[in-house]
Length: 66
Length: 520
Image: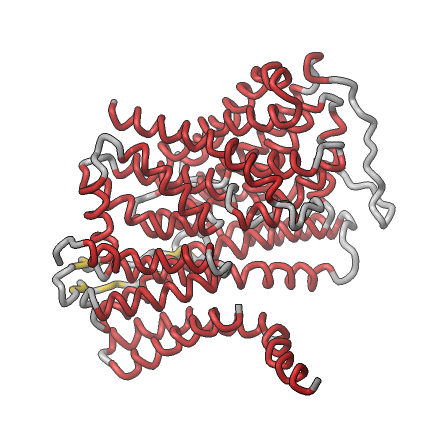
């Protein structure tokens, strides 16, 4: 019975926070995309990579939580 | 990069990922789109030589295209929920069938014209969810109700949802709305006739359909002309809305004719829970305000200049992949902050809220419920659109779309392709459940294939829009949603077969029309 509880807990947590995570993912994708543009225009390659990482994080979160 | 089967298959891989994930694994659009975005980047970088700058700038460019669509999605949902929370949508749906006792005319008014109006102002599954139960309430069988309300609004999807899927097509094909609107509106107008005829047939059989042909022809002419006029004068966001509104007025007039009147029913609508009878005129006011604002801001030059004076745009450099595919330097999508169709929808929503609140149509807590419904409905679809548009833009900048177009153009000749184009759009919408997704995935591909084959890109891309529009109502996902609203959950098999046979008729008509136009 404790195994069923532990297996259920991650699913219910994900279901409970699905909307906030999706909202955060959308914000990350939009903000990150503008960040990539600004960093590339400035020649800041590392910042561009970080910003793109934010976009990628948003996409991965979308797959995970949907 | 040479055209080989392996290169072509790799270029197709993101699209295949979307289709396989949605069909075989039953993933939703946002989830499958995000996964396909990852596939597009991996293949673009590892095989097609797209470097960090190409990928980064492509992603940035895609977000402008995405926002152009999302501004409409969010505002359209807001306007719909402002009206729905006030009970206005329900009032319109209940008053219409009371005008006539003729079952065929009831079906046409609700299952063809009103459902198209709802597609025009909302979409996103709302038309069938609202109209199918209303048809069941009138005595139609659940299977009939789902089929009528689905096929009935297929012609209105391109310029429906405030033209969301059309704007997405503009974004990904790189063609202007002014170029695409005339042919797209022509295809949709022709398809409207067959949509109406099918609704009449499903409602009451062959004889009623034949009796209804004059009414169907009149309504098709009216709605088709209005949609064409609006779309070709820069008001494509109001294409389906305006057409269906005028269709409702004309349809009400037709019910006065003896041949279509039957025995008019007494208005049997139950009073709303709060005891207040709602006015049809006030219920329609949200859409009246929208039309006045849209016409005013777009057609009065001083207002047009004022509202469109503040624009957001970004400049992008020339981008070259290691394989030599070049994307020229260009400005990204320009977004007008105060004149954008999404902004106009916002103004209309605020005005409508004021009107309904003044009329006392809201229960306490309405603003919170409206905001919650809008957010929950919009966030998920926003993710799907962002992912799919990102995928399509990256594919285009990596040269993958061009590879696909080259392969198709060498397999299907120019004599046949015009008939294939709408079928491809239908396939895309059938698989993904969305005309917008189909347009995003195939818009650029259709244009490039047309150019390689020496065909009119305008004709082919417009055919894509029509095919996607008509195909979206046939998607298994949409059928599942529609069936669940009339108690057919788990029994979708009763609906799907008949829906596919009937629903492909308008698609084949468009395919023939596209082929004929290409040969002229």
